[in-house]
Image 1 (tube, chains in turn green, blue):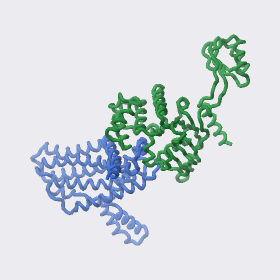
Image 2: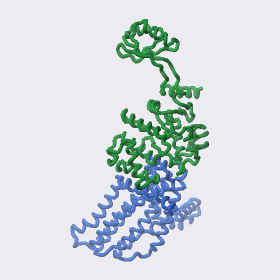
Image 3: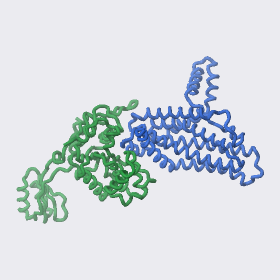
Image 4: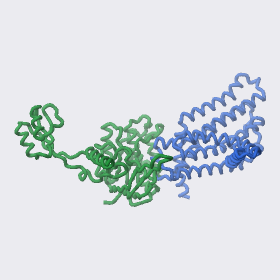
Length: 314
Length: 276
């Protein structure tokens, strides 16, 4: 698989002024993002995500190390930026412009014009589901609509790489789902997406690979299958009462998500799934289902960042 | 030729956008409305009340008020807009969406600077038009001298704008560049005074006295003499259609342009490796 973005020993130090300490925002970051994948770039606040993205765009300059975008090391040059669409977090778009005027402005900055620009505008507005609102002023847009028009300005030149900083933050669940669908659609069209986000559930649902950054160091990188640990098994049952729940807990079956007589039983590692099923039969519980339980991305994130924090303390 | 046009295409789009955004700024609209009200009030209302009793002194007073209004509000608009176009975009993150496009930093700066100039010119034209109309209605003579004065005033503003813009490129807010812009305007109009200070300093032989003379001389050499651009005395005392005297307009335009180019290059030097 070809590489879309690669950083090698990328380091960024913000020099402190006067008596302030230097801030080591990134420490020898080696990142590989393949073409055609959605890469989730995760990390707590201040971990260096936005610094990395800004260096990829030539807005900040590395202290040391290199970045290659589609094999080109001239990051920040017009030829590299032509292949990138960028949606910053919480960017402002002027209220006095209409949706299509925003796209026209950004399209012209890519050198588009005339028929090509009109065609791209129509295509992009359709893609982000904003055709109906193209003639409306931005001051009449909802937050979700503004985010979509932000996404549209990033897509106006049909770039090979999209860099999105918190694309779904602050949106309602429906708007999130819609943005997620758009992003999945773009991946299917062969685009490479780098998504920096705190919305771990969103990332888990859509990303092919993730990288977890903490204090400027890449703590983990890989596909979700590689990173998420197969934890245990859950058994869904009915006809559960308090007394039975207590007895099951003594035997290693923890009750989770109980609603009335229905519950999810988590099988501890001490017993096997077969033993769990035998116990359910012994207590005359109605079996609804048995499912393997995988670690969530949130659990992975907490585990990786927690381990990094404890290493730092030592 | 194609590459040349391509180079300026991006800045032009940025300039038009900057202009469209800038003319909607409430502070700027406030300055413009105030200035138009003062010009309108001074030139129309007094004659409306009692046109027959107007004397030459009244007319001079009206001209004085209008010229001062254009100068003061014009420079406030110039400083306000030049100080805010770049820091404003850093603050609201629009700069990220522009510099991540295939736009060079010098193109971005050129676009913002041109956009600021469009705003300054439009405001100057509006104020000047009202003053011209008022003078024409009173004296029934086309006030060509006022047009020359407006042209020179623009070149004065161009210098102030370029240096305020340069300082704004090093700043993350508009406050410091606004203060520096006002400093340039005030000291630029006091350069003759600086020359005088330099001549009088050093007579006591004390080091502090010498230093004041040295600083005054340095400022005198560096700062543009903005008084050169003023036709105020001639406008107030002369006829509206007199040709401008005691000034070489092409030389002053070249003088203003050179200072503005220097200011813009300074902005570029500050901005080309600025981390945003």
